[in-house]
Image 1 (cartoon, one colour):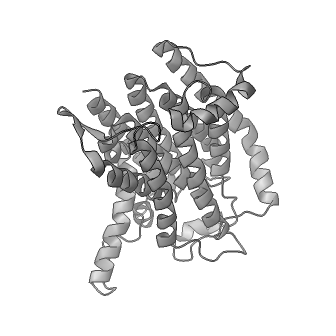
Image 2 (cartoon, rainbow, N blue to C red; image 1 turned 135 degrees about the horizontal axis):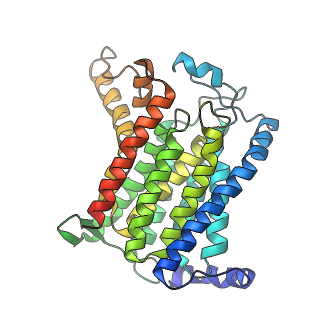
Image 3 (cartoon, helix red, strand yellow; image 1 turned 45 degrees about the vertical axis):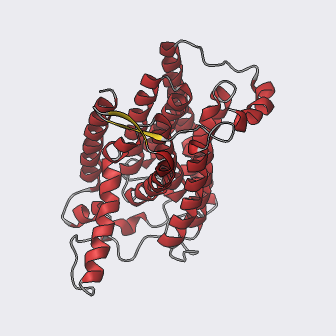
Length: 351
């Protein structure tokens, strides 16, 4: 692509000594899986040092006073762990992929800019410095800006973008939707970033669900021969699994908005690059359920003048907590639902 080819020309001399991805698809998948494994090891080895650094900087999370009482013991747990996930993912993707596959630059850019928005929100929700975090409306508007930029690059023709304007419908095939592609991409990218952010409320749950979804789209991209997307997806999976070592209950660190917004938006971007974005609500079914639970709660609460609630608390994982489920039960059961959604989603994409 002419639009981003210049960046590759600048980076290639610096990366000439690094191995390029081979041409055979099976070898490319092998390399992507290996990079995911290495990303896991690097995240695992650096996680302890990163947590100590967060503690020294006193970047501890403030806990919502209206949240479940069981969460009060989490007050002061380091947050912004998504910085580590993003750093490993972006660094590996740049080093091992950009010299040969320019398309990986778009999900990298979305991850970084979404992460920056999340970082500002995290900094407003720290112990001793909390201002309640960034408002949901402001956060979503900023994410919309990132989504608009990504949508334009996806839709505009070469040399300005990828020239994508279609969607795949299972069993029916590919349909050109023209200019409607733009609002769809903006809505899905910003919406998924927001939905993933809402899901990140209990230990272990969100990173695991993101890993499942990235695996699903990595498989779909591999079937299409989109090696850049495959590589990005599996590197992200490795980094997320490495982070899970420290986020397992009781969590030593939280992913924070920096990870949720950046990686959630990047997941949707990868979905649009494969053309299988209609399957995103299925592959990310738990993220959608979490977001819908908040919307339903707000709607009925306002319509009833503050007298009626559908759930005990939202996002919906808090409803189950207040219903007596343990955090580990919720996370594991939601993982199961996410895995089933991913399996069905991949099956439909390959149909």
